[in-house]
Length: 399
Image 1: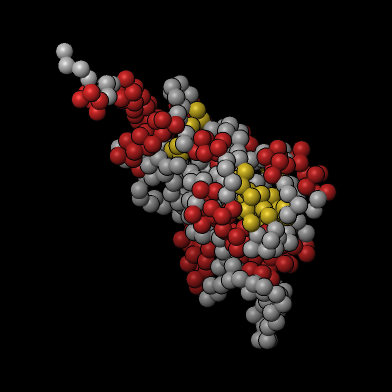
Image 2: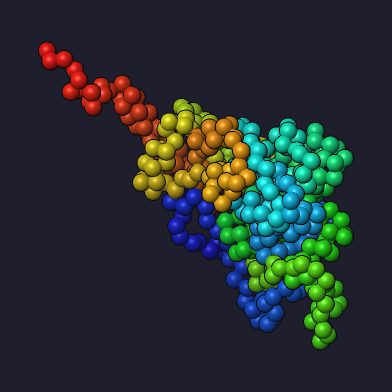
C-alpha cells in the first residue's frame, strides 16, 4: 500500500513518498516507550552501513547537523576557510558559519551544476581547512585530480551528498569513497525519515567524535546507555541525535530503497526523452546510470526564464529555481566575491516538478506546458523587442 499525500503530480515540485509500512513501524516505536536515541536508531545505523558497504554510519537529526558535525570532526575551526559552491541550499553555508569558519564561494560546471576539481584547486588559500563539494541533483563528483593535492595540505573533503543517497561514484556508492560524507533524510529526499541525516566517518576516532558531539558532548557506549549513573561532558556538543521515531521510518524506507532507485531513474529518463526536442531547453546532465536523481533541472535562456517561471506557476505547474546564490544573500555578503559565471548561469535555471508519485502522463503534461509557454514567451519577448517605443512618440515630427 502506498500512502498518498496531496498535492501531487505537476502541482508539487517535490513531495514525500511513503510505502505504507512506515505506519506500522511508527506504532512499534511508539509502543516501545523509547523516543530519543535508542535501539531503533542504532539498527538504522547498522543497516545504512551495510547498504553503503562502510564500517560505520552516524545518524543525526538533520542534514544540516550532519554537515556541521562533519566539519567539526574534520578540525574546522574559527578563522578557517571552507570552499563551497555558491549554487547550493543555504544549509551548506550555515553549517560552515556555525563552526566559525568562512565560506569561500566558487563556481560550478554549467553542464552538471556541480563544482569541479579545478574549481576547488583554484580556490585554495593558506586558510583552507576543508572543501565541500555539493552533489547537485544527486550526481557524484570525480575529485581524483585533486585528492592527492588536498591530502598533502591536510585539507578535508566534506561531501554535501544531501541529494545523493544511493548514487554511485566509480564502483562504490557515494559515501564509500573515503571522504566525510553527509546525507539528508528530510521529507522530500529519496530516503526520508520525516527529518534526519547521517555522516559517514573516515575513522573510528571520527565516529567517536561525531557520536559524542551529537549527544551534547556526553560520551556513552552502547553498554552504558540507560544505566543509572552520572554522566560526564567531555567537549562541545549539540542535541543532534536521530530519534527512534524517525529511525523507524528510515528503516522501512531503506528496505524498499531499490524500488525508489528504479522509480526516480525511470522518471528522469522519461523527462529527458520528453524534453529532448523542445527548443531553448537544455537538460542538466545527471549521469542517470549512476545517479538516484533528486531533481530534473533544465536551463532556458536568461531573458525568458522569469517569465516562463511565472506563467507555469500560474498554470499550476510547480516549477522552481534551486537555489538562490549564496554569495548574494544578505547573511553571507561579507564573505562574497564576484562570481559572474554563476550569476549568469543562475538566471537560466528552472527546476521541474520531480517526485516518485508522478506518472509518465504527468511528465508529458509538464513538457507540453513548458513547450507552449516557451513559444508564447519567445514570441512575446520578440514582439516587445521589435515594437516601436511608444514613450518617444511625442518627439516624432508631425507628418
